[in-house]
Length: 99
Image (cartoon, rainbow, N blue to C red):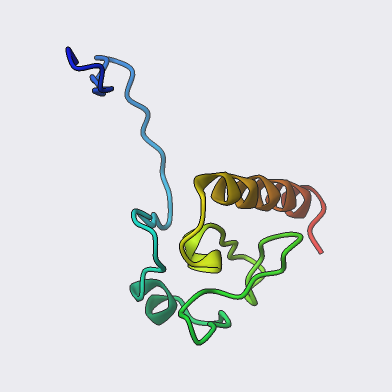
């Protein structure tokens, strides 16, 4: 806009629809307490964060990956992006060479 802030504007005909099983919105700097309560089979710390394999970002449920604040607590976006890269690499390997 005029103040220099970014303002998303929809582009007609440029909408992408994806069929998904689940979408988790993650906004904020602390773990969402609903996630550990909703998804079973994951190890949760006393701080309410999810325990993951630090190399793959896999939880105790090998089909669920996690990163960012839900794993680390409040941290930087750079660390969350790094978690996402690790998880994406591990997912790609898992999908191409399932155990």
